[in-house]
Amino acid sequence: MYDFESFQSCDTDDQKLENESVNQAIVENPVTFHCGRCNTVWADCRGICGEATSVNSLICLEVTQDVTINSEREWSLDGLFSACVYNTLQCAGCLCLMGVILYSTPQHLSALRNLFLLKKDEMYCYIFSTGQMVKASTLNFSVAPLGERVSEGWGQFELKTVNSGNKLKIQITG
Ligand SMILES: [Zn+2]
Image (cartoon, rainbow, N blue to C red; front, side, top):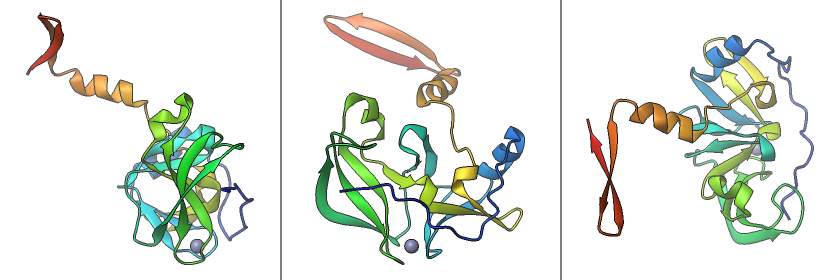
């Protein structure tokens, strides 16, 4: 069963970054995400699409080849992923379980299906601009909810709904 074990300590600058603009400057610039135990690179900032605070995980579209997807599908009765079906992710360097891909979930986790969820407590980040290694848990990777970003993107278009028969069509005019 997937378990959120406690973070094994590593030498990092884990001072909490209280200043939001400092946080923003860091997370919007090149960062790589490393295993907190063996330093293997799990992902970089191009693959990250946000943070799921409810399950204490970073959400990734892409991970490195050093993240192994275990082939056995598992399910959980309790914990953060209660009532979920998932495959666990394993660090190729030290074989620790470091995340999951959810397949079947209760409604409140449905937005996280089929994405890589990497345990935030298990990783640290290398920040290129400052040459610092910090625990990922000291940074905030939350982004605007997808709905807001989509509507910003749509701002330049005019959306029209056209009722044709019993089907609703949406026309986009640029
Ligand atoms: Zn590792």
